[in-house]
Amino acid sequence: AQKVTQAQTEISVVEKEDVTLDCVYETRDTTYYLFWYKQPPSGELVFLIRRNSFDEQNEISGRYSWNFQKSTSSFNFTITASQVVDSAVYFCALSGWEAAGNKLTFGGGTRVLVKP
Amino acid sequence: DAGVIQSPRHEVTEMGQEVTLRCKPISGHDYLFWYRQTMMRGLELLIYFNNNVPIDDSGMPEDRFSAKMPNASFSTLKIQPSEPRDSAVYFCASRGGPGNTIYFGEGSWLTVV
Image (cartoon, rainbow over all chains, first blue to last red):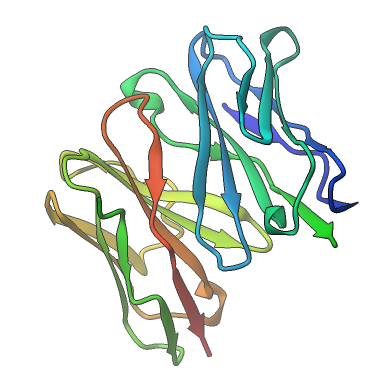
């Protein structure tokens, strides 16, 4: 069975502060995918990033960066110099590699509130 | 490019009524998913299709829920009869193949009173 845990339910920061969202996962698959999605107050789910389990390179996209550590089964997400528009719920998710493991298992989400 | 399109965006219905949610996946995607989001249970998979065939419906809560995919560009999720506990956001999502990114629609916000 797959499981994704986002221990932080809510994080509140002041604009321009950095914020790191933790994600820990469990899977028996040797290869798998990890995702982050953003859900702004308007409600839609916006894809942010996908990582393959065999690629442990960290990734940076603008103010967003991701730290994947297979040894600790973690895929953490950092927003640098946060902005009010970053206020949203962020979900970490996991899916299997083979056809039978296509479904996404989501964590509970972390609500980020960025205050001006 | 058009994303996943869902309708209606919002629906308020009375208990006992039939509810039909609709989804048009991204063209060329061969996987379609229905998810439900509630405060209590978070995001949970209800059912998914591959090439219009239901593959895993173990998440469908009970017989009141049914889903169909008559062709590659259309799917429905039906609740009959609806109950207040069905109130949730229902997301449709599609994917272009195993391991590819899953893209979500904007969701259908259902309230059953």
